[in-house]
Image (cartoon, rainbow, N blue to C red; front, side, top):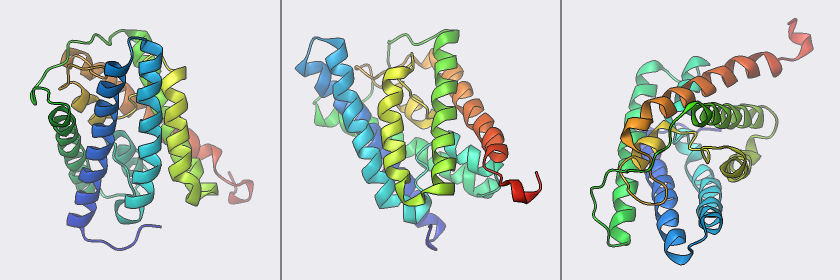
Length: 225
């Protein structure tokens, strides 16, 4: 249940949460890559911290802002009319700014150049479809979790993303703010800026499709539909 916090506090929570999420994704990727030459081991070292931090961040900031940390999720809630369009736009701006700060913080901690541009190729229809699947599943997890076990949502999201790292071809970005932030790191978790539009569009479409499907799926029969 979201308590009554001012918009400025909600935006701060979204920026902080997205910042720590991206810092974890990028930072754990750098650490994992330094500790192992095995790509599978490095991916595992990137996966576990990301799932863990999501549990922590959603538990911490959920009561303040709803803990979206993701423009696709915010768009999904806007489509449900659970957040006003102007507020949704402010959330998205805060998420992107927080994510960029998270990337730069990770670089600073590992003594890397703060400003970078990724050269990692992540393109093609299979990658875009993987992002659609990843984000559809994430949005469905959130909506069904809120409907049936709201107190479990932090764990549901953390576990879903942990799994999606491994069952999707794209390693489940599932988040436009994270994708944008990862375009500015030429490390293990990076993505070329030129590959961003396909990822972002697939993520937003996945969230929108999940809202439509779950709106039907979660209706009770006694509602007359």
